[in-house]
Amino acid sequence: MERIRRGDIDPSFVISHRVSLDEAPHAYRMFHDKESECTKVVLKP
Image (cartoon, rainbow, N blue to C red; front, side):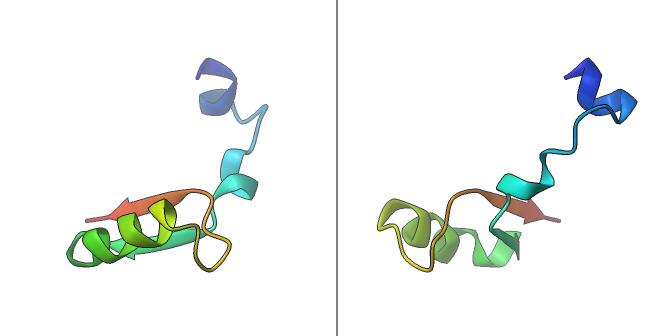
C-alpha cells in the first residue's frame, strides 16, 4: 500500500468498472457472473 501511496505503482490497470453506490448490486452480479470482462469494480460515493 505504501508504494501505491507514493505513486511507485499505479493499480488502475486492474480496474475494469467504476460505478456509483446505487449501481453496486448490478456491478456485483456482473463480477460474480463474469460479464463484460468485469475484473475489478470500484464503487464511487
